[in-house]
Amino acid sequence: MLTKLISGDNPRSPVLTVILLAILIGLAFAPFLFPGVRSLETAARICIFIVLVASYDLMLGYGGIVSFAHTMFFGMGAYGVALACAHMERGFLPLVVGTSAGAVVAIVVAFFIGLFSLRVRAIFFAMITLAVASAVAVLVSQLSGLTGGEDGLNFLIPRELTPAFTLADGDLFGVRLNGKLLNYYLVFLGSLGLFLLLLRIVNSPFGRVLQAVRENDFRAEAIGYRVVYYRTAATCISATVASLAGSLFAIWLRYVGPDTTLSFEIMIDILLMVVIGGMGTMYGAVVGATLFVVAQNYLQELMGVAAKALSGLPVLPLFLDPDRWLLWLGLLFVLSVYFFPSGIVGRLRQRR
Image (cartoon, rainbow, N blue to C red; front, side, top):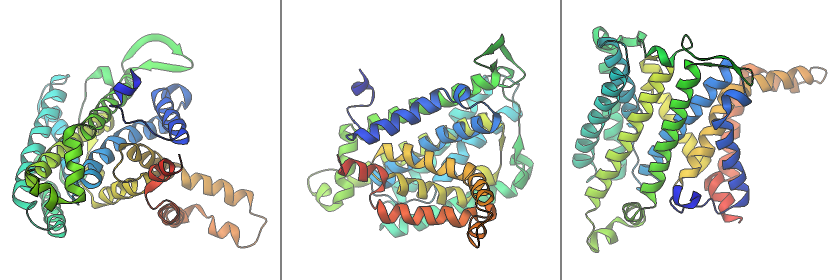
């Protein structure tokens, strides 16, 4: 049953199996294992970024397509929900309408970008996607009357998904049963469903052809596969899943803005997560996103504790100053690339 659920794509490493199970259990029971607003925020962000990174890896790791427009599709889903909630009566209908509209727009844009750009060389396609994504980000910032501009949009989601809504009286293991908990499990189950869908796609005949195109597109074309069609389909699927991840992100935050959904910094983060976890494997997205988001949220605090503990020593506390956390994050990334050139998941699978 479990093998069928993961489409026969077993971790193929005992250590990786333990890591993936630990992440799954940690996310599934995060509200009870790690009570607190910040830890719940981190867990929800991990869920969403796992899907976002996995959808990007479908293009980069499986299709060999380098794109810098992934945050654009992420933003389309987020702004779809935000605009629908801002202009429609409060309830679940705006969430459905906004999510669907964002996904449709993402498919259409991805289709035209793919159809007209994937015939060119990879570097030119990357430049085209970068230009389109930059144009959309500027457009969103300038249309302040509709999108809120640089300030973004705050909007109302159904009351059943907010902390003001009470599911039941009393607590469960010390956790209040309110709408925030319901919202978290909407994000968790939505992300889990999308991830399993991606896992099914990459292990289907379509996914195999995509890998063949990545390895040698000329040979794939020679044996009868229309390479452009497969790459365009991969781009559309990837964009749709990224858009749905953006919708979940907007529902969770109840806010969208250019910095939270469309910025190039998020695109760099996605690339780092893919490289750290390992390209060409969906499980790399799980490991990479989890490590990166946890480091982003807690590395600064850990450095503060370490600097305080070593305050009696010379020089060392200066290097562990919490303000230098980005330096250490960059160093961790360099070390991970050096010791795990095929990503953490790739290295673990090689050692089985």
